[in-house]
Amino acid sequence: MPNESSVQGNKVAVVTGGNRGLGKDIALSLAEMGVGVVLTYRSNKEEGDQVVEQIQASGGTAVSLQLDVSMTASFDTFLDQLHVLLPEKFGTEKIDFLINNAGFGKAIPIENLTEPDFDSLVNVHFKGVVFLTQKALRIMNDGGGVVFITAAADRYNVPAYATYGACKGAIEVFSRYVAKEYGPRGIRANTVAPGGIVTDFNNAAIRSNPQVQQWIIAQTPMGRLGDAHDIGGLVALLCSDGARWLTGQRLEATGGFNL
Image 1: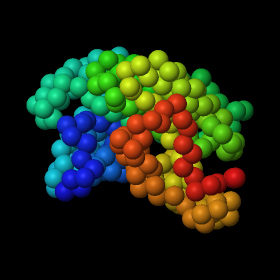
Image 2: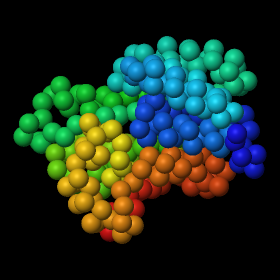
Image 3: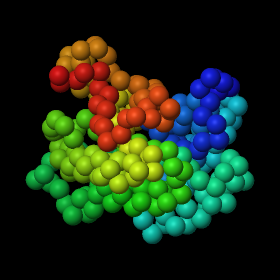
């Protein structure tokens, strides 16, 4: 059950890509804090339903909805579904937090980059995030917040991640504009930039490669790889009253990698 001292009232968060990896732990961490969760999945409904069941088993409230963040034309339909579900499941007509987490990794050297590759990365990691945020802010309560999951690769170079890192860098800039334009409503916007996290991201590129793991650990002052809860817990903090004076900031969650 949620800790009574940390329950966030009747607040609701939308977590994109909440069916697996970092998104799953973000959804679970928010639910543990007492926040209702709407998590999205692109194609794996079973995974989304399993996360919902896990949250409900712990006394929380959650629903899962299909959403492909690369398909901006589907966003109005998604919002229509929210319009029905929010009062029905959560007793409210608005959301309080949007966590832009959904994404994929693809290592492509600049020499090998094609326009379809470029479009797929931009549609998911930049265009989709911008327009989903725009629409979500219209149904967000004053005093809410947006968290953008970016990547440490927007600060330092990771081989073959030029386009991915550039998209994440663009979102970091966009987040500061959200913070500026929506600050008068008490809405805050921050980015979380994970480093080497052991998940299935990019075909488990870190989890399945001991050499990469050792390379990351050797450059990390805290002496270990990250896990999903290192990010989920931080996002939950950003959605708590303890972070109410924090906006327009980039939080790099890497254990100090490459200091």
